[in-house]
Structure formats: structure tokens, C-alpha cells
Length: 185
Image (cartoon, rainbow, N blue to C red; front, top):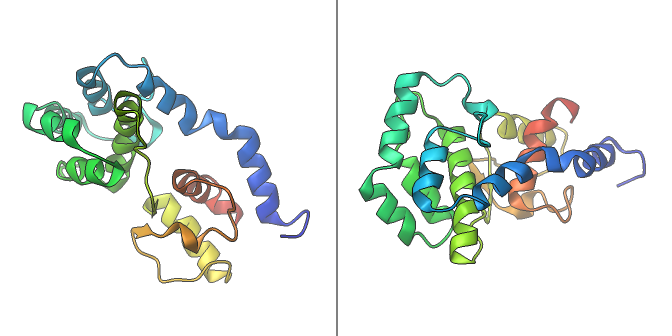
């Protein structure tokens, strides 16, 4: 990539600002004392002790209550305790989708719970592939239309699709860049 190229500027801006995004939220979940608390906080869509995640601010109370109740149920808690990776965890949380809860909320909740489980199980609970939903999909489509990546695109894409233009970024960071900078591509 040439110096001054728009993608280079985007990556520089992301590198400078990235601690403001997922990192502080994931750190909050890593510091929670137990899985019950993590499930409760994730069910309320908290990004920290006092704030709801921006993506979930418009979800109706009835939908939030339904989701939180399901997430905190003994059956789901037991399955989450047994999950081995992000993909397992995502499938469990995805079963609660509906009634106002979409794929973006499932992804965000899985990232939050994954951060807690990384600490508890001392193993990686981050996605191995790039999850494209809402804004991230819009960003990927813009890159595709400009010939910067090759398609087809689906809701889950191999990191290889983006490795040339986003070298060194993790899958969840690529999702973040696609969403945050979709209007800049």
C-alpha cells in the first residue's frame, strides 16, 4: 500500500483509537468475578458497569428481558461452561436470537462472554473468521466493489479475504474496522 493511501490512513487512525473500542469492554468482562455475573451483564448488554452497548441501545425492554432470561438460564449457563471456542459459544447464544435480537447482538454478546471465558479457561475465545453483519457487511461490500477484496461475501468469511489489506489485524479487529470506517472506504 502506498504511503498516504486512504486504507493506510484508516489503519493509522484505527491503531491510534482502538483502545476506545472493544478493548475496554473486553477488559471489563475479563474482570468480572464469575460466569453468573458475566451472563447477567451480557444479558443486559452492558459494556461496563453503568453503560449499555451502543449497538443494543434501541432494543425493546421485552426483547432485552427475554434474551437476559434465556442467557441466564441454568441450561444455557451449563452449555456455555462446556463451550470450547468462540464458534461453540456463538451457536449457543444464537439460539436466543429473535424477538428483537439480531445477529449483531449475538456477536457482541459472544465477544463479551468470550472475554470472560478466556480468563476463566485460559484459552482463546475469539473468532477464527470474520463475522460480517450490518455495518461490517456494508464496509466489506464497499471494498468488494472497489476490487480490494474478492467475493463472494457471506455472514462469516475467512480472514484470508482481508489479509492483504488488513495485515496483522485479528478477525475481530477486521470486523471493527469494516464497521467503523465503512463510510471512508
